[in-house]
Image 1 (spheres, rainbow, N blue to C red):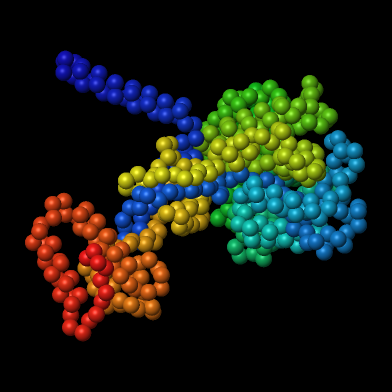
Image 2 (cartoon, helix red, strand yellow):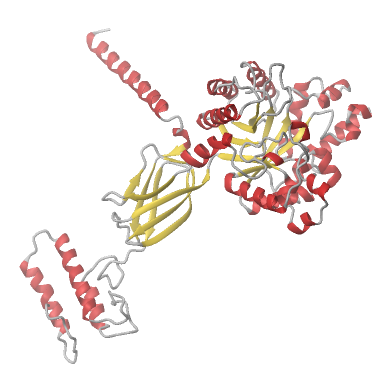
Length: 564
């Protein structure tokens, strides 16, 4: 290699090194850059001119990222008259029995609780997962009226919807009793019922589709907890319907995809994050890869986050998400909550303190939002009486915000949800935020001399410009063409003294008079001075002559101000 080649090589190497260094520095500086768009907000008048003397307020109203919750479908959709018709026991059964998890007695809700519950969902979430009414046993036994009502509430309020669970291979609830092992079902009959009720054209996925009788749901947790529940596939394998579990589970996905090619089909499991090492994440990754290799059209990986360990750190969570991301699939945190009940999820378990729950909540939110493969964060209930283990992440029995809920309000509804006021613009009428704005929907308000113009539901999801066009009243621009010229003078002259044709009523006092001429004159002089750096006397003389000619046409009387 000659000296010139060596120099060129060193230059290229240095440039590559600096590029990597700068890129890594950027990642370190802002781990949320992938959640933002680099946008410039520009304020213009209707003629495309910048309006630099305006100020701007902006407020994010909806995240692009899905922050959601599981909802109790009957509770969220019940009407006041329906609620008042229930007895105490029936009201209690709207919520889970939590006496095994620390509640002294079953909670009896009021209708104010129902309204608080509805409002909390609308205030805090953009995505919901109704559950009980869509489970196999419940839907077959009670019909679709309850999930229909819950889904109607969601769609009317612009909430996105996910559904759980299409196939959950449990030998207990929610599998219909006739197909549980103690009923000794015929395997082929059992299999045919599963396909018909859950995977086929007469089943749940077909009903809740664009061509079905119910709301169109496109996000489906198709296979729930296969690392832990294998009763269905074990039964079918024993009868020769499938050779092994991979074939069975892949076929569930294939049948669902054939029925609903528009749907996002998800696999979902637990103890992936809540573990004393990366082993379960690696086992889950390997299962997903095996299913993909068998032709399963899996669209996303669900990661339940029922947290009971105080020794799981943010770095542990990131490592396990990285392992799952090796599949190339998007990841959803599907069921976040934490445990403070006296149960025994593992031998050395000690109930989590409020401080430990807060730290876990913060670590999990940050790790999820920072990870580029994660696109949803769903908590599994949010209010203690409505939570399956009497420990909702946000609210206690009396709707007080819990201390351990602080990360949600600090981050999701704080740092990650911009609310900025009195933003000043540069000379080009522009404003931008270093690093960009979080992606989502925004409301903007432009204030110009006390006159406000609002812009709602502005979507920011890519780099570019946001142009806010406002109507600007230009003094002296009586014909509304965006400039002040002799045409505006002629309009004032021809409508002088009018109280009906008020286009040239510059001070809005209800009559075109000499004061409006003064407004035009001052504006015209200012615009002429800005357009002509050194005025030519002859040109100004021509303008004045034209003005006087029109002013003193025969049979025309106009009272001019004394200082003309």
